[in-house]
Length: 380
Image 1 (cartoon, rainbow, N blue to C red):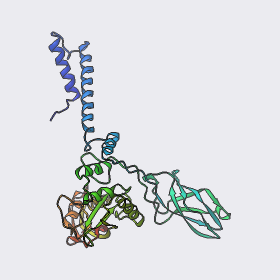
Image 2: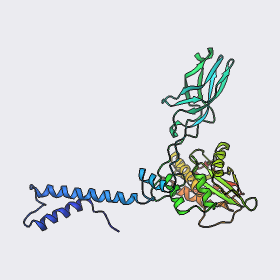
Image 3: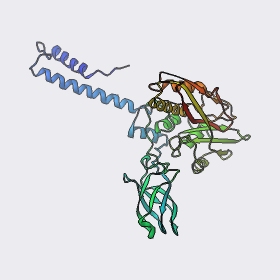
């Protein structure tokens, strides 16, 4: 393996070259013109080596970035999943009659705008629920419940004077940024690099399990996919998409399932009877005792590690036959209790602790996926 010389190494090489080809010169002594010249040549050589290293990385989807990763995707017919605007509902409380036009604008304190997707009226005092969508796509358009909103335009009626608005209890959700590159040497299907690597490692095969993973993962928001063959007899296939970046438990909603089903229907083999379904969440309650140190920071670190562990290790159970090279097959499985111990031990600041719940591995029924449930901590 070729190691790129450091800047100092390149400068030293230039100094030795001057000594070799110009006897009696000394590039180590200042002041003379050979000393700064050696630094200039060494810097140029070092820059060339760095650029060559950059070019070498762009040759492979494992390490390419930006527009060069886009070109790797284009060779396979893959493009980045576009940004998506958040949507939800706004709650407007008024003391008198109020009318809302379709396209009415509500504004968040930081300037983010939301547009009413349907007109609505209320004849007197009360609460009016208005469906809204963000004016600009991206994750920044998401808003948690009860976030205050200003009634900017498109509202009329005597109730406008005292009306107040906020995000409904379900929040304004679903906003996503343009698909990210993904870290080098990793294969998370929720990233562009991960999808490219999966496609390279699993060429199209006329309806293989990997094909269904590829087709489903092209839908905006999908981060993981599990496939169950012959779930209802020969020719049947069940696809379980997950959307970890959109929902806390990763379970997609009915509208998301419809989008995935529509995308797969366009490319699936005609003879296949395909069902796209949301996995059934099985929340796993966790109790941790003898936590040392017993601090909020350590608790939050454990929560973060456990959330990452559930995303990495949880799988949808099914009746398919396990195939080692295909971890996306929905086959009989369970969630190991040891993964909870491991995640807890990986948490920053944790010195010692014990998992008291669950008491054993988590058994799963077909179609279920384990999700992080309620958590309790104790010092003893």
